[in-house]
Image 1 (tube, rainbow, N blue to C red):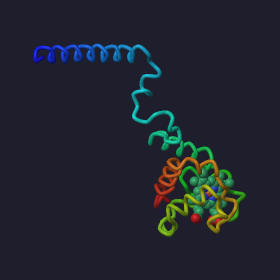
Image 2 (image 1 turned 180 degrees about the horizontal axis):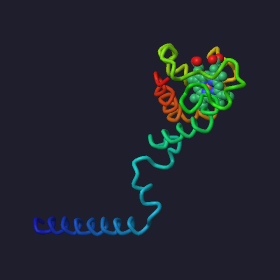
Image 3 (image 1 turned 45 degrees about the horizontal axis):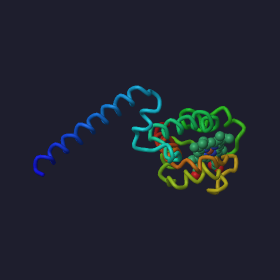
Image 4 (image 1 turned 60 degrees about the horizontal axis):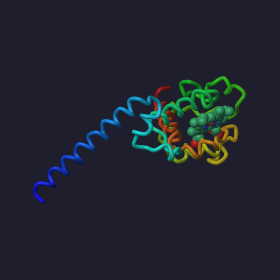
Length: 149
Ligand code: HEC
């Protein structure tokens, strides 16, 4: 009895080492799917995106949509601002930044200006409702303009 157990142990060890090796070879052999299968977040939870991806999408959203009215520097002077009355919010305004909560900013973005008692010229962005991580990053972009006037 005593003589068999270590042998079995050794056999199991040898087998698992072999399997590990096979796994390694298989991984390095298949290029594209390897990083995904090794990742901690399975692709099934597609709603969850990486922090880097959320930051990227928020920046892209600002640069392609918000910038049109609010301007690259957040001063409310984008190309679309000229025709608007009231003017798009100046994000660099320290007093405004102090007065407004992140929740209210988020609400204005998703449901539009009218939802927070402001001009309906501030459009709603309903698609962002399903992208909470992107919304958080968008709020950060708006907060970062604080005092940069
Ligand atoms: C068509 C022009 C336009 C676009 C595009 C636009 N906004 Fe606005 N936004 C406005 C205007 C106009 C106001 C000012 C409303 C007011 O003061 O009554 C405003 C106000 C705001 C406010 C301030 C709300 C408050 O409580 O004072 C936030 C925050 C905001 N916009 C964020 C965004 C973000 C983020 C985007 C892009 C996802 C965006 N806006 C896109 C025109 C625009």
